[in-house]
Image 1 (cartoon, helix red, strand yellow):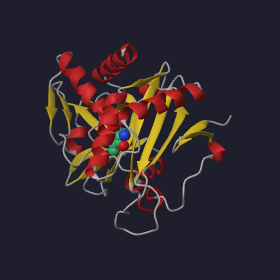
Image 2 (cartoon, helix red, strand yellow):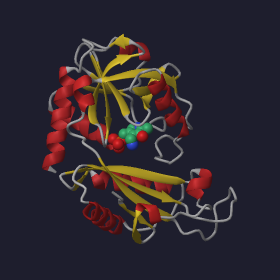
Image 3 (cartoon, rainbow, N blue to C red):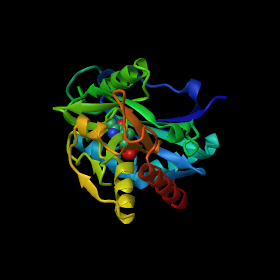
Length: 282
Ligand code: PMP
């Protein structure tokens, strides 16, 4: 069945949607994006996603194609038109179409595209099974705090994981884990401390990361925001990833070494339940 997608003011069947070949998102990856989760037909943590979208646009001196209020109205209409109950809403803003030139165009009109993806997020088999992760050198640019559509390096990392028979890649730089290919990376040490990389230009400031750290603190789990090594991760009691569409997912091995018991850890499972409960209540 064909989806309805949104492109620059129009709701269209996906096969009729068009973007210019001169769009700078296509030519230069000159665009930013957000993925918001939908549960029970409602957007989860959407305000935080739109705030990060605005920050990404500001960092790149990009003009927003619509106000936050207008964006929410389009998102909700798209969810309604597609009858989306559970899944993701993808939103992309690019600097727009202009004759190819590295310098910013004077008059390009920013482009706004959205589409939905239906998916079972709560009943995710990976939550029971856990993820096998491999480490891959982080070769991305130095502004990973900006959520740009320049995603070739994480695509290669994820593909390397799949080719190795694993599920996910954790990226490392100077011996320290930065984050996952499309998620934040966390460990729980043997003494029960949640350790996760501190915020900076080296990682995306995950919306789910922030909420899960808050929930951990409320559950009296000690939190340390600092870089950790691959060796520390292998020696951890538990490990997990966070992202909008995966919530909290256990990591059970790193480069073939079992983490903890080699099964999803109890604190990880508790944090997943707490996050889902809070999301459903929001
Ligand atoms: N890091 C990277 C590189 C990502 O692509 C994502 C997913 N957008 C995240 C972290 C998780 O961010 P969020 O919790 O806001 O989805």
